[in-house]
Amino acid sequence: MNGDSIEIQGMKLDCIVGVRPEERDREQGIVVDLSLGLDLREAGRSSRIAETVDYDLATDQIAALLRFRRYWLIENAAEEVAAMLFGVYPKLSTVEVRIAKPGALLGRASAAAVCISRQRNDFTRGSESTPWGGVEILLETRHAGLYLLHVDAGKEIPRHHHKVMRELEWLVSGELLQASNPVAFGQPVVWARGKAHSYRNATEKRATLFCCDFPPFIPSDEIEEHA
Image (cartoon, rainbow, N blue to C red):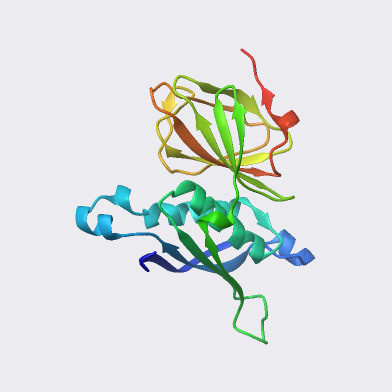
């Protein structure tokens, strides 16, 4: 690495995080700082955003993941943010994530925080074949799973719903249709339990979705809806 990085500082949002009973029932404020390591020379010379990381979009996606989940520990939140970023942004070489809870130690300290530093090879990916393409497993814990869903040209993830899992998804690359409407690139959408959805790739190139399942993927909970 040449030392280049994109810095995102002081990102504030509310989410569920904590082990105490009162923390499981209400959102609390956290502050996120990130350092995204990648080679920025080509972006600096070409002015093409495809050669870098769109930090505006990445910030929205990080916030969506943190709000979607109900974390027990900020350590878990930081690890999932890092795994997601490596999956969604292939140009990244390193990721540093700092998450602080300003209200964790009231009267004793201004904040409690964790800071992690990860390289791409810190996450070993699994893979599975599907009738519509394949799945890359970015990270699975007992609480949630983070995946890339690759939909091959001309293939479709059939219309389905879940009774147990909730899903957070967004389009990472390519083009997909959802109920005949184009899926907006990079825009997070949450599928509640019982909400049917499908994706169709009508192009000649593979498309990829990021997906967070909460809890992690349960094959028997992939309930197809036949016309």
